[in-house]
Length: 92
Image 1: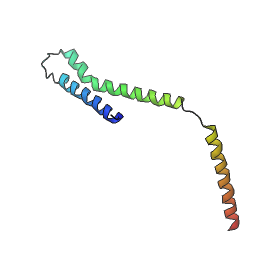
Image 2: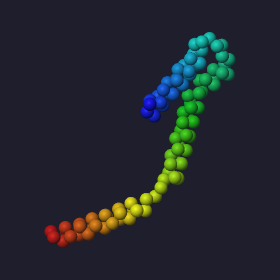
Image 3: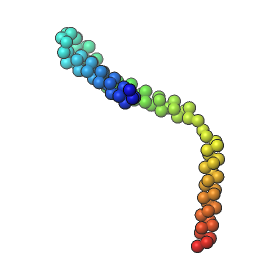
Image 4: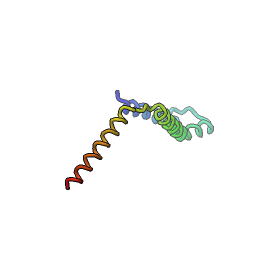
């Protein structure tokens, strides 16, 4: 199962559970405090997801490994390209 399929499955299960609780389909007789909590749950989950996404990006950026070998190779290619451009413009 791919990550997308797993995420959609979890989202679907939460959505079904929320609909069942929000509309009181099984007839649980939830009090108004519980209904307010159920109705606020999607906003709370959205904020939690945003915090998780921000933390994940921050952790990935802080642990991003530098590649000094690739940087030196890129610098050498840039120098070679500049020299080639100089020779091309001199030949014209």
